Length: 142
Image (cartoon, rainbow, N blue to C red; front, side, top):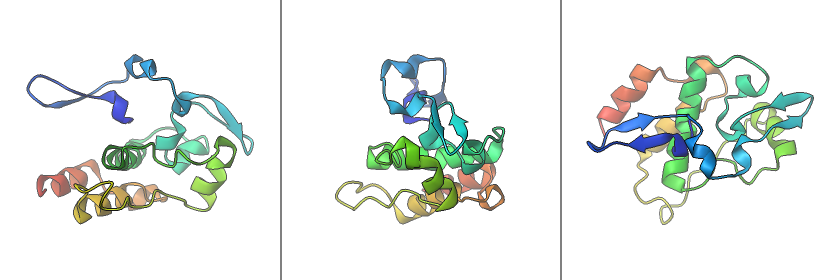
């Protein structure tokens, strides 16, 4: 789930899409890369570690992507976009590298609760990620 795939309708409701419209903005997020013997096709910056290793997308993968989308929205940058594609898989999967919290001046609206939720969403172990219901419950308190 990329920030580019979230549209706001006339009633200010968020609508998710992935119909190729986001490809208008050409960037390195949707290219095919072969690294460490694994071919990554798609938006690797939002892919859960188990997907990067070739696993099928499952609900916890969406939660992982949501957490990184939260980061992208508040930090206004691609999560881990500074990492070279050849180094991405070993750093994210093996070393568990995740984004660092932006400084307050760069993301003044990022609350501690939102930051902690994002961190829980991008846990390496899919079983440790919150459910969609738990995410919604947390967001309802904000």
